[in-house]
Image 1 (cartoon, one colour):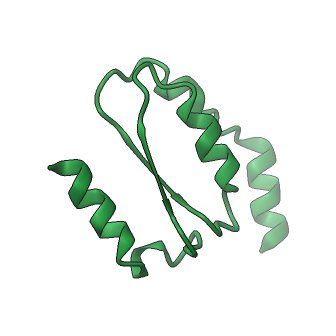
Image 2 (cartoon, rainbow, N blue to C red):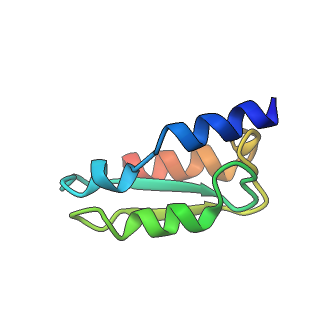
Length: 82
């Protein structure tokens, strides 16, 4: 399974930075501090490519698959939407 994911990643480039460079709307990037799938450094790097600087929120202790279990996650979404 891990090998299959690795091969998929090699074939499919996720160049998210190309997709965000024209976003001028208020944006929120939520980053799981302990993300084991997408390293947090990539979220921080992605923020540099937005036309309008996004708000960054790092969920301390959260991983890729359990971020929704942290109370800081819905709180970050709610604060952004106000």
